[in-house]
Image 1 (spheres, helix red, strand yellow):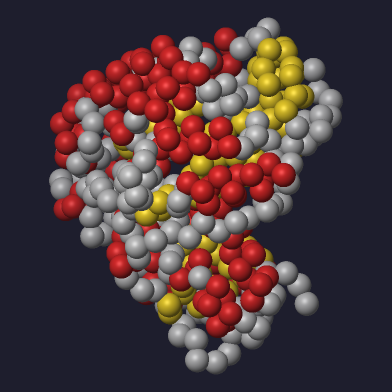
Image 2 (tube, one colour; image 1 turned 180 degrees about the horizontal axis):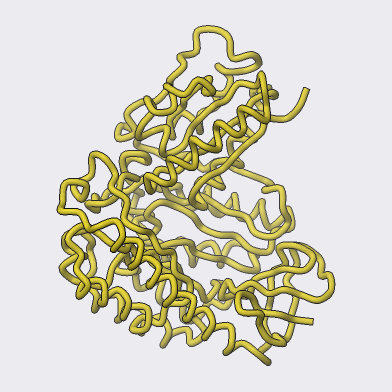
Length: 417
């Protein structure tokens, strides 16, 4: 009898939920199975999930294949039609112990082959307490799920439902347990992190949660994953300014640099808002670095609109770009808008990535001779507080934070002795 095989696709929230599912499957006694946690952010993500399912089925003959995640939630029929797939379960169902109990130990019985309910009816997000992540470096803690916004390109709200927050006390308890287990860095994850607290009594904000975590736990390094900068609250900005344990790296959901395209995307910020936020955050924390999601080739995008996105890399001083060639998602308003030629989308995405590569080169070159606290992810690789990779010439203890002086870079990573 062997342990289940898990395959995770997509975001940090999915990584957290995969770890929670490992515990749920173990508690239910589910052993010989393959579980694939899918992503639906682009059509390419769905294609990769299907390819992974076929590969895992070949490599694990005879084992039932269970598919879940955002793609399973938004298009369950796609996966139910695959001969390799035994069960399709939704994003809410995958976090419920009774779902796993109904499938173990042999997946035989009254369990429906497809268990995907209306995600919009889900009103709460459980804070699953996890003690380990299979590594000794960083851990991820879910504090929020779902999204109340309806950007015209995005399918994710239909995979995750409306915004729900994990109560602060549960989050603090989880992080305290992880610190006791020896984790030196915790990452707060969610679908729309800056909406945290809106559905809780008193409507606290994300900054209040960050302050509470840092006050009530001894977590050495706290990191925030992707945020919507227009919703950053005053307490969060204060924490950026004076909390050394809050890492000086923010990944921003910017999506575009043109005001007209931002309006057609139904975003809540304009170009000037993004620039103002980055300027203020760096004023408060001079060593702050930014990552950003940017879409290339959104419907109706012209070369002039695209040029605004290219300039945003410099205007916001972005370092780590996640570039998404626009991918139409069935059922979204953007899918009905006039499309940009596929070759143009590919070209613009390449130019954005080139701008991102140049930004990384500038950041790496500026670190030579500087000292950094590096969290070791493996014996010879770790990350700075700004999330730059550092490659070492000799071993360091995995999971520990080590002080080092940067000797240079190899074009993609920092180097140290």
